[in-house]
Length: 87
Image (cartoon, rainbow, N blue to C red; front, side):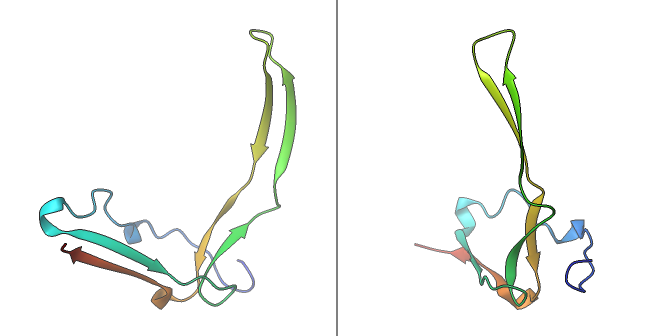
């Protein structure tokens, strides 16, 4: 739940990775960003940085950065795809 809106995974809403091929043209994605009304970024707890220190195997320092973030779409009309664009 985020700001009174339930969150859920909708795996079937993912577009195919292959997109359209060259014979069918190209595609353009348009996204309208806006807090709590369109598409906006969300995060849980902010950024957490941990200094791991110098590695024993080589002279380098390692830092771990954890940030649980994502995108939320509050209005399905805020995302559009135009496909089949020809030259």
